[in-house]
Image (cartoon, rainbow, N blue to C red):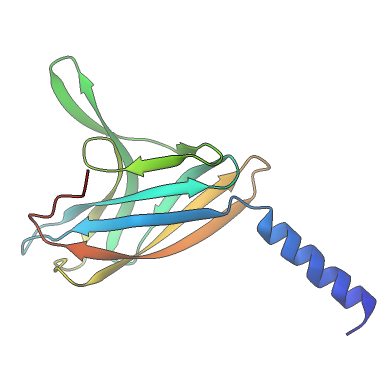
Length: 147
């Protein structure tokens, strides 16, 4: 391998590591009942550098959206959000009652023990995008995450 090839390979490696470097932990999606067409996906995200979660995709549903639950007066309301900030080195929880991912138009029932593939699209400060692919385990309908 010539010096130029080594330099190109090193440059490609550096540009790949310059992206957000997002890690996903404690990911899960709640099982569904037959005919149910939506479900929530939850996880904890951590980015080495400041970044933004800008999109989510899955082949398991027609559409995946980022949502937020918040109190509006005396009522808890859910609404779609365009993005979720991932501050550098900080954990961002996507969980019941806060930010989370909604899957709409499920193509089949989600059963405990299965996994749901998700692709998270993260954008760094330089507007470079990284895809983080995750296999999210399906937990029972009664599952409660640890506090």
